[in-house]
Length: 93
Image (cartoon, rainbow, N blue to C red; front, side, top):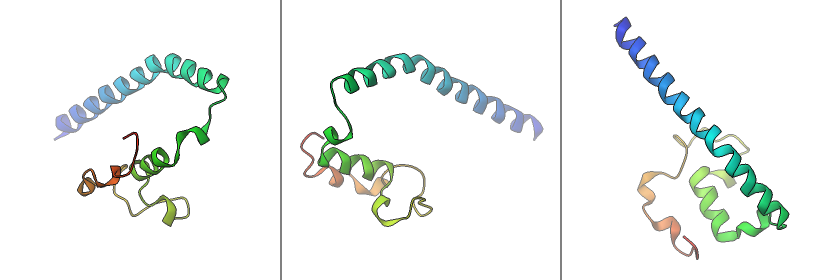
């Protein structure tokens, strides 16, 4: 039993390290892109209502109905039973 737990913790550690390494490798490019967009004068208002609606639905489906902490939605992201319905009307989806 102890070996299984140790193997699971090791696998989790390797997975976490991979995510940390990927984030570090992407950081410089993401920082450069953010600086370019800011220099162009672009900001949150440029997202558009359609994309904002999709972003909120995917990241926090109950955003408009809770006070900052959503304890009702399991996991992060839109429930799987939504299918493609949430994309209807989104011009750039």
